[in-house]
Image (cartoon, rainbow, N blue to C red; front, side, top):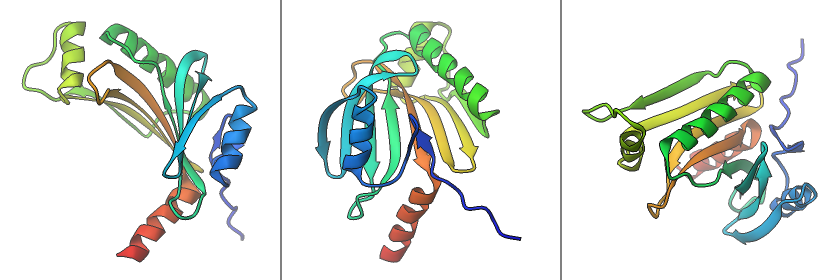
Amino acid sequence: MYEQEVEHLIFKGIPIDGPLDEFVEKLKGYGYQYLYEENGDALMEGAFAGIGGCCIAISSIKGKNIVYIVGVLFPACEDWSTLEKDYIFLKTKLIEKYGEPSTVIERFTGCVQPEDNIEKLHELYMDRCVWGTLFKIKNGDILLVLRKSINGRGCYVVLKYFDKINTALVDSLVIDDL
């Protein structure tokens, strides 16, 4: 019996594979605006899952020019209730599409549990909040998380698509270096 070959993970109908410039061109066809490219990664902007103003980050394997991760950074939120609402909306839609997640961790890790939305957001800023959902599917992983901004101006819902085949290639390149 032959094992069926695993296909690449899909983002917006596009396999997460191939040269970065080709992937970018295909996303332009969906109306995404190209922002810039740096060190084998490209940034684009547009609507995703019905939410406008998203930043799309496409990562390619260094030295190989093969796309392997696509991330979506949703617009910054200054309040917990909006952030949580967006997270729950996306989590619900992902469950509808991919089934139950393999891992869900949604907790505050500080000594004191927050009592209101201001305190909850503060805990996220202080790195005392782990909020994420992971879907392990046959052709990759999809990760939905909450993150604070690096510059301290808002927090974000982040959605990342990791292609299984090309992520394994990155892992093998790391092992080869060791």
